[in-house]
Length: 231
Image (cartoon, rainbow, N blue to C red; front, side, top):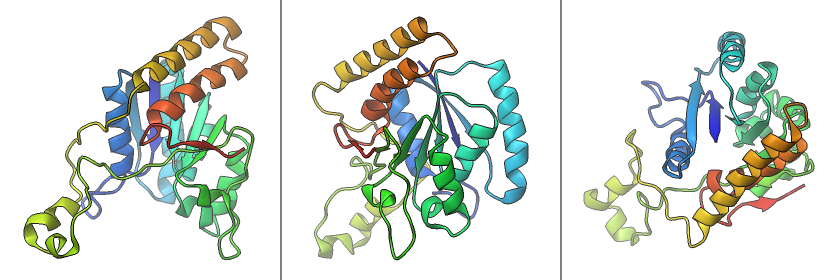
């Protein structure tokens, strides 16, 4: 299986921690034997059109079983570039922002699978609407890396020795423990995906998305069985 991750949550000198959870997820998916490539571009309105052009050219040259976009505007770049099947994970500000939020809600009806990092993103908050509960929508949490973060007594956490645990660095993190039976779930999901791709052909996505969703829920979520269906 070959997956392309599209995101504008990329680090820079001022925010080296930006998109840490995306990179953690990519590392975990690769550790599970899935081929993953990344297409990243900087934030800023002047970068969306060039990114769309570059991604469209990439998709014409290469074939991916799945395109997974992180953040609503990155999802629009992937959608405009012709990415299919397309999964979009929404992270928060892309849902509540007065300008980006309406764009994200429109995109939710155009993606093949919609995911939010929490159930709250599908609910109204202080008069601001959440994501629509489109059929098949799921919660795919991007929780903390338990190999890096752990409960610590308050007094100890305030000391220099333990305070370093909370530092967000740019290194590669170890994979999360996925629980008994996870590898079987992954194998079944991949088998469904490849079987669907052979049987339905390039013009029909229903079977392909069904197989892809099995992979997404079991591999792309932060912890096993932590995802839930909304729509």
